[in-house]
Length: 397
Image (tube, rainbow, N blue to C red; front, top):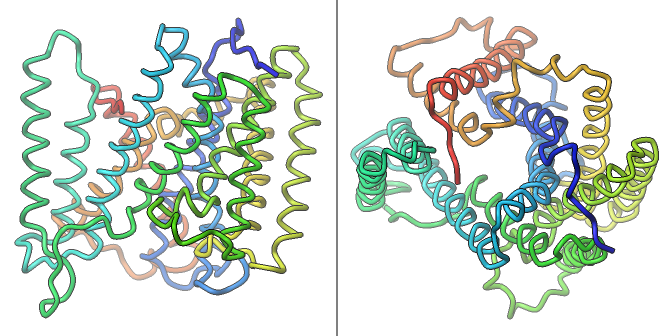
């Protein structure tokens, strides 16, 4: 069954941008919780091996789901501009490579040996992020010489970092290596899987459903240890099924959404997507006794439950925008439209705070006051993103 995206309502859905923005604010917020003490345990990550999840454990899977949710619209927009299937696949692959590169550089910063490398972690992260912005910035078309000069400098900087990097302890120094790919790398692999499924489906809902069934089953088979070791060469973000499954779940929801949008039937769309959410919750309940509910284990129950929660959040935001309440979120919208740039902002903020010697008082780093501090920090990152975008700095990968 083919789903038409030739809608007069446009291919950019405000609710998707808002949900992505809210998710990015939450991501920055929970990533800043390390700086706090005496905060509710339900806000934090659940330790490895524990059956359960906190708020922090729902943010990353929600982002992957939103990647899939926006995928069909992004692909169709390129099709309408004349992109061939080959060009679409190349776009997915090149975008994946960009995410992998950024993920690997940032994850190496987590284990950097400052003395052996010749620079501390904060400086490493700052140079990396600045290079990413220069390399993937959207330049004006008439600035080709300036663009390639800037990009060459960024590439040279990353190559130097690659060469000088040393990580680990003094007695066991290690060279630059992929390690676990990092958050951006995991997003990259998931994007590759869901992107190829979306492109190759050619808007056929049955193919998307088959893709969802495949990755959901792969998640279950992986945890049941039924995947032959022969396939270990495939990155775990794809082979494990769960992370790619989150993105494909978002794509599935997107196609169902568009099907009823074409019929101008928002009520039935809401009913069907709500029923899908219920099915996912039931699948989470059914699989939890076998492998638990855990982010660090990337269990099937985590896949299904986080997909359901994110879909419900999207439906709520969609109706708010239908009722003309989208302006409520104007202050954070840059986090949803220029998400990668917003994601990089905390790296600059932490380095700046260290450089100027800013130390917050103890009372601002614990309890409710500390939580307000972390929330305001996330809002400031969104505001900084807005200012950079207004000054002409936008990223495009």
